[in-house]
Length: 355
Ligand code: ADP
Ligand code: MG
Image 1 (spheres, rainbow, N blue to C red):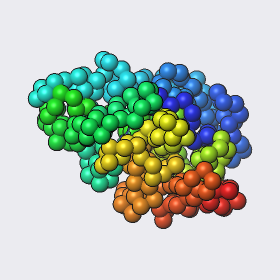
Image 2 (tube, rainbow, N blue to C red):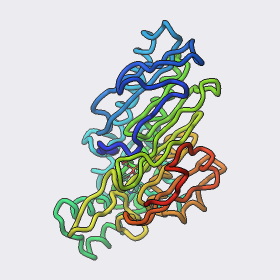
Image 3 (tube, helix red, strand yellow):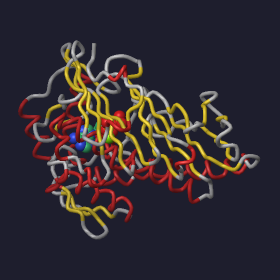
């Protein structure tokens, strides 16, 4: 799960015609939606990043938002405790510690997410692969020591990566090698956002937004309210590139600027290309819109590996659309899937190229 503190997406500007008054707290509705209020909380210490949960409730009944928001917050914390590889007690950490040929029993929920992750590995032609944790660890150590990994170490980590090392069975996982590990950092946040959003809706609110580190899911939003507008950052500045307007679903961003490390003066992405075993360098930043945050999260990571060419395998029939920033600081460009441009509002004077 992410330890990022910089928000790839700058902010949620407004909930349709709702205008954000302060960073925390109540959003004011304009005259067009007089019957509802938006109430937000910003719980701390979730998934290592900033978090904002918003519930839309009938005007005059703002107090009813608090218990609904609390259940959504608890759901995010539950998913983190279950799936984070940063927490030694999580199920995933337990699986990672298991030895060769040892079966680790897992909850049905964790197993279902691992199955979905495996499906996404196939769909992304191996670009998204949660079994690449040995490579992630290798490059993390390289980043910490400032020394590039040896070819032998790289080759070893590559042999530990891949689904042949993780046999998903009915109620447990059998590891081919004790050193094989999984890392749900590219998908668990999205999954948690979806679960929290569904929990919020089940708690009886009219609608809401779950935003974790700039990745977010909108629920229960009707056309009456107008779109939710989300700002997208330029890849090399803390300025806004543009804004997209959504009536529901999710948006997630994977960005080189958000998290990277440096070795011998060169910066490397925190996303690994499992095919080469090396940090991905095909994109500067990727923003994906999808019906669920799980899909948006995973495809943002996959396209960070695949770059613009990955757009051709995007499952657009599942409602997934993407914006990819690529190139260099001196000259970057954007390219989108065919369905993305209709979402864009106010992109830097409609320009798709950097400076
Ligand atoms: P975040 O939004 O949390 O910054 P991303 O969604 O961009 O992160 O996912 C990056 C994280 O996914 C990495 O920190 C790592 O844990 C994991 N990861 C890195 N490369 C891959 C990959 N090729 N496939 C799946 N997960 C990956
Ligand atoms: Mg991701």
